[in-house]
Amino acid sequence: MDEATSALEFPRGLMTLSPRAPVFAALDLGTNNCRLLIAKPSLRGFRIVDAYSRIVRLGEGVSHTGRLAESAMNRAIEALQVCAERIERRGVSCFRAVATQACRVAANGPEFLERVAERTGLQLQMISPREEAELAVIGCMDLLDRKAEAGLVLDVGGGSTELSWLDMRAPGLSEYASGRERGPPPIAAWYSAPIGVVTLAERFPEAPGDPAWRRAMIEAFKVELAKFEGADGLRDLFESGRGHIVGTSGAITSLAGVHLDLKRYERRRVDGLWMTREACEGAADRLAALSVEARAVQPCIGPDRADLVLAGAAILQAVQELWPAARVRVADRGLREGLLLSLLASHRTRRQRGTAS
Image (cartoon, rainbow, N blue to C red; front, side):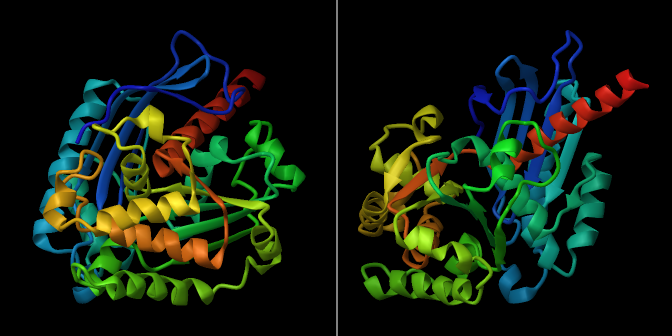
């Protein structure tokens, strides 16, 4: 599904604009989705001039076989060919493409990326879970509540889930958010759970009308997340109501669309929306009462996400139960936007060095 051209605001001061400012592009090939953003600098940050998103389910079956399936690779290559054509047509000059969990864990992941290069001309870089989490935080930085004392950026993917805890009291966070600091964001703690919506849905086939099915998914993710103790220093802030969650994923934006009763998906209404924990669970309850076929015709879900959205809702609920937060801010942004911001910052640095020399 194509995404509408739109304007996005990002931290100011990242670069000095010029009439010959380059065109940037960021491509994210995940376990479930292939996403592309093409943007030009604007006075307020970026202006998205082209966007493309297609669910390709690259990681379908990887949790069982350890390999990318031929049909899944073909679907991904078809989508990447579309991306390559758009990149060329838009005259992109600064570009980065990354691959995440499915390619990381599959035995034939590197072989697949070589095939992508041969078929499309795109050089995809397999990034680490740590960098994936950092890029998601960069992309969501504007949505963090500066009045809160702690934040948790939850990036629910198809094959893994990245969680990044931030101490909102740390001086380095405000410096970074203002654009005055460079490098990785000041993440207080980080964890990559090897469970995403695709792997969780494959592990727990849907049992219509059985509440134990949803609870089994929630508990499975809680067991995995409970293994991580590196963020325990911030736990009191969440348990006392001083922490909040920023959730980025197709499943979470779908819950927001259901909560708002949207007749069609509207990014401007979803991105930045605050939802209570009760509202998140209420939207999930509404979807659980529907069959897969009925969910497929929901305007904010569609057939490609109908069998995965409740797995995403289960991951969100598991996190909320272990890390209590009364509020969740929905992010229709994340890794791709983080890539674009990083490209922009790198371009500015190169220009400054060139000017200095």
